[in-house]
Length: 314
Image (cartoon, rainbow, N blue to C red; front, side):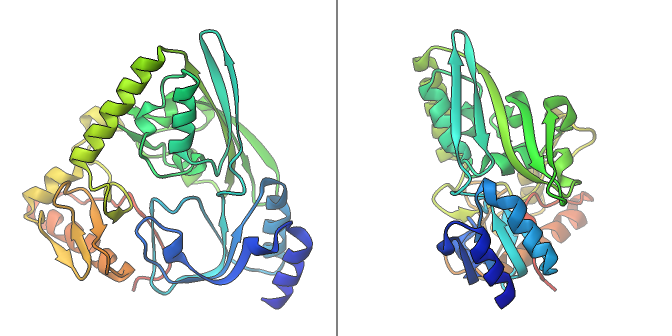
């Protein structure tokens, strides 16, 4: 690892932006996870050189954003974690009469972009209020809530291939579906996105935001550590309206009050597994597996985690 660090010092502008043995509990909304061998908070103009350096040294690479949809093993992550975050979060606006566009680096936080869009009297991103992810992560999984999702506002996405080549995608190229996009099958790093939205009365936009905030506070455990909805909705096809919420199946299976160690099914929303403060990643993992097993036994339906697992859990 010493030779890798030596090369990174030549590439990166800020030596504090890469650290050895970094606790991933500091970088996930679950607040759990062991140490990453090497953690790199990268800037856009460093990304190609950093990934090239790591591959030259045969260091495995894991890419994360805000860690809001991840469960990292207590054993940590071997190799390097590249964080697309605070050093890659530029946002620029081009607002005209009747609407405008927002160009975002992939590390920009989704709630921050939604707030700035509202301040610019642009509508369409109100649903993102309170979703604690980055633009890159939101594109990757087509993040959505309260009837809206990223596919409705994205016009273009940029990425970088394993070979350091820049790629450009239109909305139609991205293959957006329910909590999915083509990037879950591609070994590319999302670097930015362009959003287009119409203009609206600022008071109406703020009223919708307030309504969504109120609904979220009443229906979701926003005061607890979680990764958002733990499981995907279930059903045939890709139409959200035809899908069954996982929480209904969890309650049907008698798992409403289930808990293991410091991990628990939220009393406020059965679709959320929460960290009550003392959970390990293994507690959360075991509870997720127990829910899947019980729901399968009782209902015949196999739940699929929406949360991405990273590291060893066996």
